[in-house]
Length: 179
Image (tube, rainbow, N blue to C red):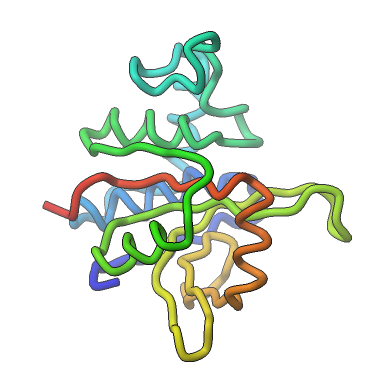
């Protein structure tokens, strides 16, 4: 990816998605004003509001919150916040690896959710920003808010695809290249 992206460390919080949103916004807008802890606090307040029109999970559930304050952020909650900042964004489940590789090739900022259900580490989900893919080593690279030091986090392709499929291959996409 050719976009400048500086890492922010989430510490012991469960705020990986707000931190990813902050990092993506900074890269998209060419700034450093968005901080993960502030985005998380603002998302906590937004959780009390109905979903943004056009971003409902299902027509029958239009008021499903985008975040459980202090705990979990859903993909539509990330999109609601991005849209509130004037950034065209969307999300969808069941994405393909081809879509992900296309986004990488087009420098399209993309947040994914990986995790496990009932595995050795229990049930967990984690958001990261996709940075790149090395076809030679078959390794994906991510900007991971849980990684100290700001280094890219590598995941072998097979391990990544397994963890990504646990949460339905969700992509949160900023819809345009950076202005």
